[in-house]
Length: 483
Image (tube, rainbow, N blue to C red):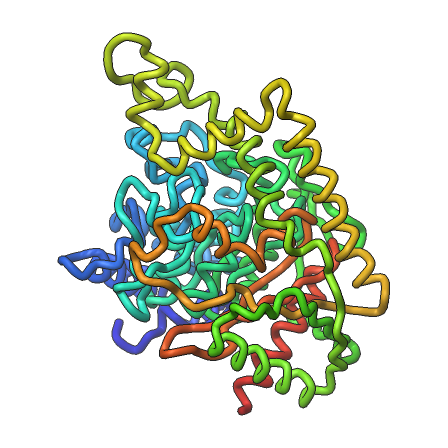
């Protein structure tokens, strides 16, 4: 299919105006072509052409039978730390290279129930630990806009697959920015919902108080529709809850929204000066200024705000996420999970061979900050500063701010292999980590370019105000399109 019908808006595909089999065949052809040869993007770890076509045939039959499903026949890719039946779940690690899950994640079951076609599993930083998809045991994902540059991370494969036109939508996970930063680098929309809006049952845990499943789309409306389908309470995940204003919940626990309701009035936009640093790329700064001008032209009031504890977010995130990773990854020992290898102590040998350098670094850091004599000094202190970061946001929103606008990342996608110092890599999350620590919804959307590379702008909202955030993003998307 050469007319690009597989990249129509998700709602158009779901209405059945085009055959789901044709749409899926076009996507799978794009996947096979994009993943072939020496110039492959390396966005996918696994995919199954025949299984995808079989799913599409069922979707066509459902539509022919009168079913009205929100994602009927829509091809969707999944980050490979989300458990599925029929495809491996590797977490881009040698430790799980041959692992097949005996169950499916709640988000996968909800996608299937909505008629979506699961086409494959996408590349990521090993166990989602990274900001560039370079720590994957399967090699780095390349940026579709410049193959010499990273796609971002840790959900780089999902972002690249959408940006390259392989699939119209994808699922990722966001711990410290792993949906938003690759969305910015690849020039697509990426949404991290309020922590607790989407079930994490079946997501391989990295840092449980920070992890959240999110979505990628080509437009704000596509991302909003995908988010609606996967949102909702889940008896298998007690942290997945629904507030009274988070949507109408059906018997399955899913929320239903049109994704079309715009704000009654243009929102009041807060701009935190801590996010506009002196070392920010000039092209990113210009793109943000242009976006703010577009918002003013759309009737929005722009106010300066302060989030004074922002500068502590990266070290706080590093301590807390490493501590939780150390605990969560203890199960991967070659006995309970993971392949067994080597001689001597089987657990030590398996973990030495199975984990890459970055995962080992974070496990050791997490074990250290949780150890006797250091727990209070590092982990407890980090939790106290986390509370201060959360309070900064609460005070901003209580002062009449509807949403905050910031750059998603301080610079565009960097060259593969350019950041070898871990601290420089961690700094890529400087504008995304604070949101994760506070459990807030945030999203990135394309706002321009710098030196030919995409630039993302980030909207942040108060807890459970995901719809206000999406409405503001839609307003900006439309305003920029008119320019």
